[in-house]
Length: 457
Image (cartoon, rainbow, N blue to C red):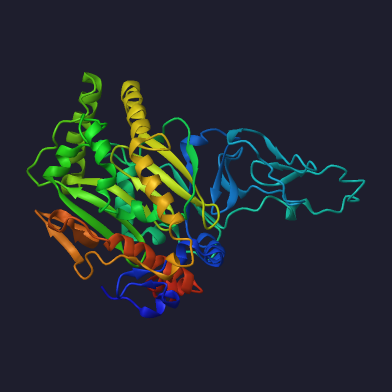
């Protein structure tokens, strides 16, 4: 793959040799710059519309280290506001979610409507002599908001490309998480609340893991032996994966990457989800419908992936969206949303809820393994001696394939076929390629040159 050495900042990300400095994980100075150059410019996941179905509903989310309010105003418009009073900066909303007509700052009492307007100022006549221009002091709103199949995304950068330009061809892989199990457009909703917990490591450790770390299966052997999967074996539906080709797919120009499994053209999806007749029948019906609706694309089974910089997708069960919120160079706050088909029977939703809890989150058997790895790796990389030695990301270098095709199905992106290779760090290198580009580039003309060229025509 072609790449510009000028994009790799001060030798910290050396993709020519597959070496990455530990400094990018433990340096306070690099972390502070990340907040400006990555999180203040990229498109970030904020929440799901099913969390704010009614006028006045709100959900307090995060973008980088910034607390933000996702809300629906009285006219049904969706907004994302900085959760900070314009008077002295106090959070105007200290609840996780709810419904309100106004957000009132508990410090000095400035009040804001659900559309962000400043509507209440104590002693407006007496203290401000009625001269404060309230129209200029509403809540700070993000530069751009995008809504897609129920999900809500935002960016602070008015110069950023549209969300769909930012996604590029990766959009088809995002759909694997957001579309209904039967292949119909959209139709997913959030199951119950959002799990939140802190882990003592840099946010890039989980981001790289979900980009497609295919090498750490030793970590999950005990979970596989327990057999927590929906079909009663492994962690997931192992039978369908054993029949499929296993791929890693990346998009160097965007920084997104994912894994997929591709079933042979004539291979029916093996039965799974044998929890009860209702559950088994629902998923058997959905699998057949998906192949009918999507044709060849219905053979694609989603696997963990990452939308740059910090949104992880798990399209197949457990079907989740996770965000790795940075909380300093040495800490990450994880938020995980769980998705189900809105139209699924209640018994199916209850079954999936139990499975999700067993698998993911701070109490999930699989995620406990992952967190232990990230925590110890980060702690072991902070000392002055450890920081002299880079990490090795050399697996699979030079073996990526463009325009991959097999058994009548072509897939977009740069593909690494792991069916024979077993493991590669192709997707991980793609994450750090994009990270280095964001840290180096001063504008979007450098970050998305094709878009800049089209705009100039």
